[in-house]
Length: 191
Image 1 (spheres, rainbow, N blue to C red):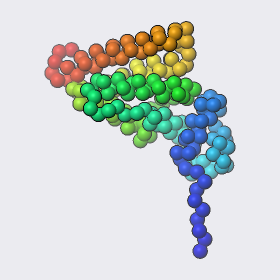
Image 2: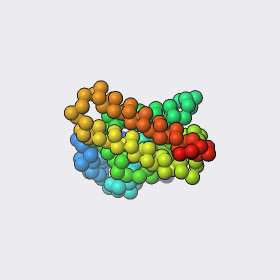
Image 3: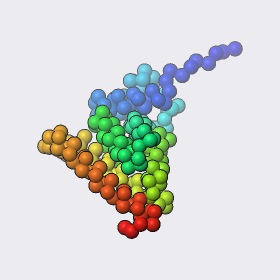
Image 4: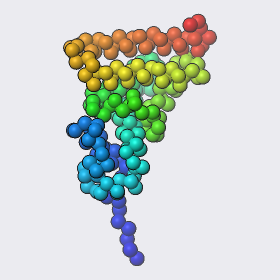
């Protein structure tokens, strides 16, 4: 009876390799051949674990979002959302060449949906109307992601780090005010 060989790789190792290639050489360097070389398999062997470059890209988005640490559950809801936003910024800073993908691709992997679902649940917990929570998440996330992508992409390179930090703090304060108002509207308050 023949004994099956264990696989030489797995999906996580492949996605980690793709992220390493992107971090070292830029997103354009992420090819199936480059990832296969990094993992030590043939490019065709990758297709057992990913459906192609588009699937690999979606999984990179999920991998990035999975790096965002969940905030402590005992914090008030707005503070939890701010902690998530700070986590997004830190992930962007660690992976500047690949991070723009999170603004360009929808959250389709389970890892990516976990973060989105956490934000939606936190919004509802805070009083945002459940019928509007997905929309509020989408707009709030776009604001945070847009800032981070702009920052890591060099748009703010003329500003000192302290100014970028102050800008991010102002963005969070503006979002806090808008979310507080939205939550009040969800509880029957005025807009």
